[in-house]
Structures are given as C-alpha cells and as structure tokens.
Image (cartoon, rainbow, N blue to C red):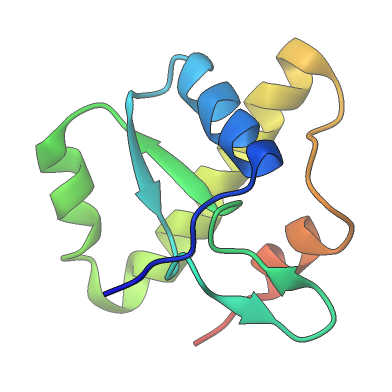
Length: 103
C-alpha cells in the first residue's frame, strides 16, 4: 500500500512537534492522505505526540471520544508551539479545518 509521503515543510512540522517535549511517538489523527475541500491535505499536519506506545494505542480505543481527544491534543500542540516559537507554520485553513473536522 502506498502512503502519501510528507513534504519537507510537513517533515519540519513533525520534528517541531516532537521537539516540544510532549512525546517522541507521533500519532496521525487522520489518514495521512486526508484531504479537506478547499484546504488540501491535513493528514501530515494533524499530529498528536505520545509518550509511550501504550498511550498511542489507547487513542485507538476511545471510540466516539477519539476525535474530540485528538482535536484537544492538537490544540495543546499548537498552543505549546506558539508559546515557544510564535505562530505555528500551518498552511492557510489547516488549523480551522482541524477544529471543524467531523466524521
């Protein structure tokens, strides 16, 4: 199965998220190829850091609460990034698309 590879910009974001110290393991909240009309691919932007594999696996057991958890965790990532570095380097519309995402 072929997966969408992250761009250089998306790789920098992933490594910036890792460097925040919230966890080394990166969880993709959606399929890496997830596209939102008018915004494009959000799959490599919507990242949630996890400290352990067990924490990462637990996300998959949250059922209906999973997306709420992933949105809240992403907001913490963005907030921590902005405290340390200023505005998060997310493309136009990505942050809003994640906030409004529903499945």
